[in-house]
Length: 195
Image (tube, rainbow, N blue to C red; front, side, top):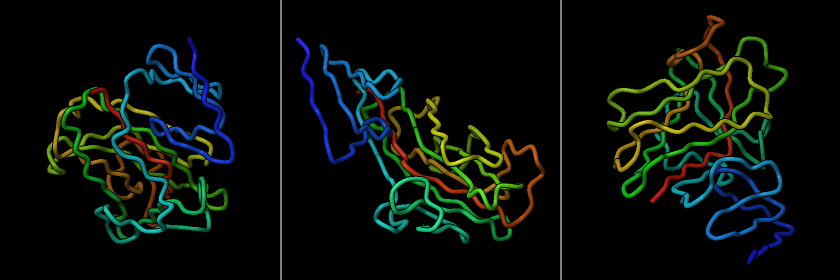
């Protein structure tokens, strides 16, 4: 038997993906007809944020971190990092106790007017921020990219730290030798795991 839920005039987030058409439930698995592919079976959303509160409350942050309403990726606001002397980043502490196979999904981008030598990095820590693992770097990303990563060793931990940094802060993978004044926007963060 298939249960179909039609969703109209609203968006919902599942596993960090904004879903606005229909969800089908077949014996506990989910499939979505708008290109969702991510093995949603038995996944639980642990955290989501699209910055629509207009603040960075709940994040640790460094100078050059802000909320922007001007160059947004989705909705009304996005998180924005603009390097000021190599310090722009935001970090979020996540408790994954009781969950394995931790997956993070988000969107990043740089406004078209600034897309010459801009970029940033995504990192995470399994020890409360003492050391970080570089996951990916982005050079001049457009606003249409969604990225999803499964974080090794992040399950059943009380002190996972997710960090987004402009290219000056960590420069994990930047290939362009980027200088101060980077701009890097983040939106639609989702964290999920398997119970």
